Amino acid sequence: MMLKVEDLSVRYFTKKGVVYAVDNVSLEVRRGEALALVGESGSGKSTLGFAIMRMVPPPGRIVEGRIILEDRDIMGLSEEEMRKLRGSKVSMVFQDPFTTLDPLRRVNDIVAEVMIEHGVDEKEAKERAAYLLKRVGIPEKLVDAYPHQLSGGQKQRVAIAAAISMNPSLLIADEPTTALDVIVQRQIMDLLDEIRRDMGMILITHDIALALERADRICVMYAGKVMEVADKDMMMKEAMHPYTKGLLSSLPRLLSREWPSSIPGMPPDLREPPKGCRFHPRCSKAMDICREQTPDLFSVDGRLVSCWLYGR
Ligand SMILES: Nc1ncnc2c1ncn2[C@@H]1O[C@H](COP(=O)(O)OP(=O)(O)OP(=O)(O)O)[C@@H](O)[C@H]1O
Ligand code: NI
Image (cartoon, rainbow, N blue to C red; front, top):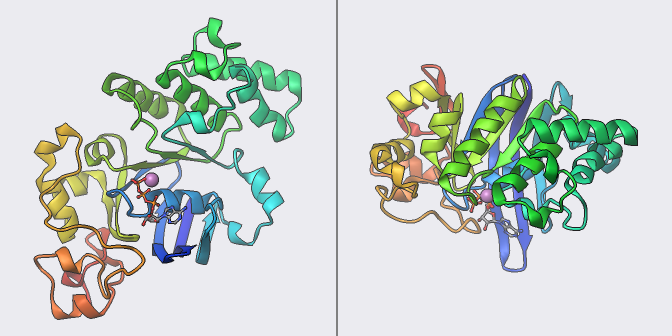
């Protein structure tokens, strides 16, 4: 297994209370697969992505769990060891590449810098940066440009080139196309598909249609918990969890790329998540046990589902 996350919990210790952002999450990413992490805003997707990089921003903290990257538990690594790992074994690209591209550096240097930090010598790093930029579709005349001279899509291409420059085993892409217009979105997703080859990818998105189109497996999150994990084809055919069923029942309308509104109610405030199953207040199938006890992730017909309808 490329990545195993076990019983991971992340909380933000804010002045206004503790936010239970990721609660007891377990998931796996197989070698070479694209796993989509799908969920509405605030469900804990980015927090989970940051946690896998051991980069949860304060006042957040990983409070428990294991993160095993290629058979190595990275929870025990020092910050210095993590710095070596980030970018080389696991990399991340973000929604807004503005925040990750140094505005004062030329594009080629931005990409080369990542490699230099990981010990590649300068000449080799610059040559490889030029190659990578070409590979991600940056025109040659722009390799010496500054980020502000690029379009949004081009900036994202540069961020991708930097992220894959050390051939990481795992790429975490957090809403990589959300800030882009529809045509550019497609180009960037095609680029990710093409360049990652045997690299594993976690695609974080609130866009279920995009997830179903691009990922091999889908992990649905709700209020900091994993609700259901299944192969894309299985999920398309039939969802099991009432929450996922609700999401997918509105699939035909998803072309509008908005969060489906077929589920009444609102997600909970994660400072006071509901007892039992976090989805129970919005669930039409809720039973007594759902209000009291949190369901495990039950393994049913080749998928995982956290719902009392499917296990005891
Ligand atoms: N820096 C922070 N301080 C306090 N709370 C935070 C912080 N970052 C996130 N949270 C809270 O943690 C929870 C999970 O947020 P997170 O950003 O991980 O969700 P998300 O699924 O990525 O949402 P989005 O789709 O909006 O990006 C939310 O309740 C959010 O308000
Ligand atoms: Ni997010």
